[in-house]
Image 1 (cartoon, rainbow, N blue to C red):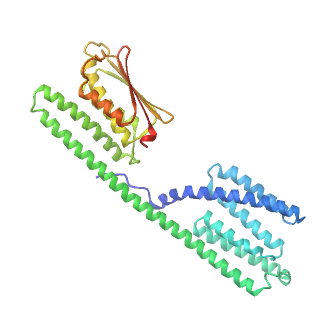
Image 2 (cartoon, rainbow, N blue to C red; image 1 turned 45 degrees about the vertical axis):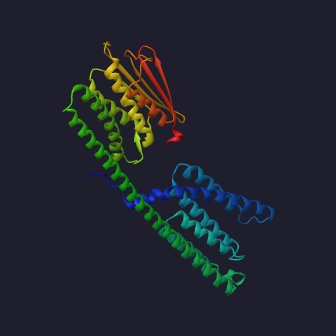
Image 3 (spheres, rainbow, N blue to C red; image 1 turned 60 degrees about the horizontal axis):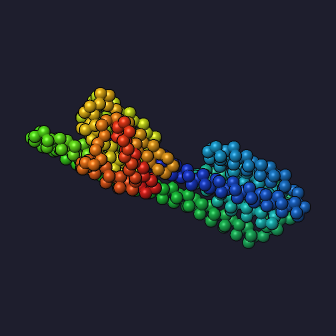
Length: 385
């Protein structure tokens, strides 16, 4: 059984985490913007102008990162910019205020933010760079150690280091378990897709077997029975075609409507009548199984009906099929320029089957006679997707 190989697991994991990462980056941009605005206002009210210029510059960088990087989908560059802004702001605050007032505690949310922006490897690299820079500042500013309440308190130093280690370990554990959870979900999903695909393949094969059995049986019958069997075979072939397209589709639950209908009418045309001109137009639509099978059976019945009865006296037979989407409504129009039919006569089984499939779609059917026969079918998509 031939099947396209799935994407590498690492690629699937990156794709699965991309949406989550985008939301995190949006939240961090928003939170940083609000906090920096709050601190600028607070420092202005307290007449503390030491760090306002730096904070204002970082605020402008936040705005730049959001509009020029995040909005354009450049998540990597946006992450690096946010990480740099947070590092500069935190380290500068520690340096400006001489390691006092527990400002080093800003490292905790900073490191958690970094681990949420990057993978655990990049998170560790960023964290160690920050610690190294702060260590160098401590060596450079040894005179400030004498006046720092925070650094002269051994209990505070021990608590700070303990909490810092807990934060790093938690961030590392969180990131690795998250990736492992994604990996397990993707593996389970791959198995589910494989099983679903196998079901579609088996259903298609079974329908093809039934179709072949009908074809063999038709050869042993008279012409009237043979025509009946041929119509039944075309219905089964239409359903088999759906499962065949689902089997080769990347989306295991939806079928490309345009490709399916084109294949359907060409198969019927090659079997029943080559001289009929069929004009087909369709919007780009992906239809679910609950939509495409009824639509396929409707078109199959109408085509067979047209080929058999409509063009006995028509010199230039023509069929027009249009499938369009208008908001949440699907519109299917079928027209032939044949002789139409007598509405007072009893409807054959094929037309009754059209009515049943329209009801299955929970749609409406309008039939009109104007230089031929026109069927207009409309239904709401939200009942089927």
